Image 1 (cartoon, rainbow, N blue to C red):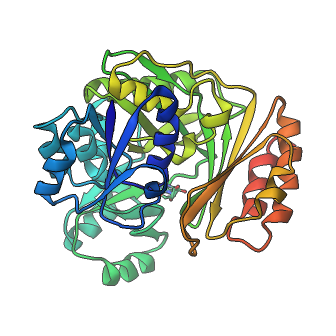
Image 2: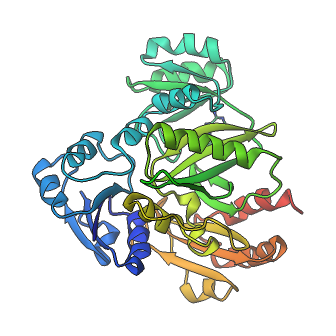
Length: 380
Ligand code: AMP
């Protein structure tokens, strides 16, 4: 059985690594001749808009999925006329536009931050009036990792942003003083079976995820259930198959949905070693219609992204119960080039192991020093 994957980055790489033990084969399509999956799988280099390449790519595939959420919806639709495509193209369409995504949450009764659309620059004042300050202005499309965003605290910020704004659809969101960011990974199989991983606590710096702690501790009663309900509603509404991630802000003991990703997610990488079945294996099982694997956790896990720089493998692996993943990408500032997962059967042990790590990373952009006090102070 050959699975087709649109996008050939690290998520695709880890999907293939999870699929080989199941006897699966992989064919990737990515516009870049440097896409990391080239090291381990058959890679087609073509644009997502190249219909003759897509047609050829689809030939003989069992199912097509994607690891990159900005794949043009049209490419997914074109392929869906030839082969099963999961998650469905509609999920891509919803997730690629922040306004559509927030409206979907709203329609399904999933609480979000207050928001207003700013379809033209001239609508900015009315939106500020409605939502109030402070607020965050975001481009509706193609913004990720904090790009295409303006934090508006004062009237002066509004005036300054007005001069910089591109003439594209925007969304203005109320700035919420969140306690922390949490995410849930839900998975739904083609058979309708669902499973959920525990909520994970995420720490960002410069708009990039640095550290995930799984499972999130000190959760108020009901939050896990609320997150699962939210994910279940979206999975059902979209007749979804595959892994879906929803990111939340925890505010006053409640969850507000911020965004979703219709694919395996960076905040689920810990599951490779920290859960009975990884998000990657469960995504493959789901899109193939196989039974899902257990999402139970094995102790506590911390996932630390390697950004812009690779450490010496032997230095990192010296820390007990630590696993290293290099993605085969050329290090560049701000680029995710790998991750480290540290496990322990007790939170205190996990903290100790994490604190052994920074000395290997002090030169890098990796920022564990900054993420850690925030993450661990609450439990000290
Ligand atoms: P996003 O691209 O929506 O994930 O936003 C990037 C980061 O900006 C998030 O991880 C938050 O730290 C912050 N952020 C985004 N939206 C809000 C908001 N409405 N209130 C407070 N912080 C936010």
